Amino acid sequence: MSRVGKLPIAIPSGVTITLDPTTITVAGSKGELKTPQLDGIVVKQEANQILVSRVDDEPKTRAKHGLIRALINNMVTGVTQGFTKKLELNGVGYRVAMQGVDLKLNLGFSHDVIFKVPLGVTVTTEQNTMTVTGIDKQQVGQVAAEIRALKKPEPYKGKGIKYEGERILRKSGKSGKDK
Image 1 (tube, rainbow, N blue to C red):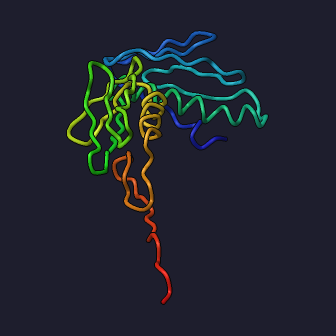
Image 2 (image 1 turned 90 degrees about the horizontal axis):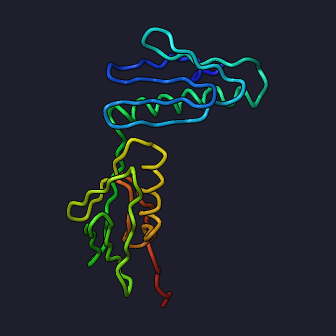
Image 3 (image 1 turned 60 degrees about the vertical axis):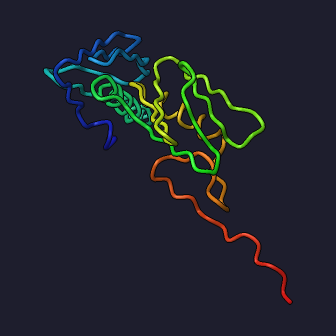
């Protein structure tokens, strides 16, 4: 039995879950999220909790068991609290600012980089930090990864965009000639 899959999901007040044969819909105060039902997985709602079980012990079904439970749990967390990722911008002359709903980044290139923020995600800036927030955990992580990929932190001086709390392995650089 899946250790993750067998755990019940508590439904907080203000959250409604609709179980269709093809989709699972979770609605809350922050919005609504949907995910498709997976074959071989049974999702039941009892009182104020969701129970996930599987119909057989096939390897593919066992793999889906913990997955669908984690997806439903992330949807419940997203519509109640939301998800946040923070990014830091390090480097001399590196700046970030909002330009309407888009991000304008000055990353040491000969031109400014304009990042179009997708729907469902909001990005706020404060000095050299960016905060990516939204209700879909996957989308928030994807947008944060795309912003970071614009200028990854380099190992010599640590310049670039990194996650808050990320540790950059530093290299010493040139050792010089032997005389």
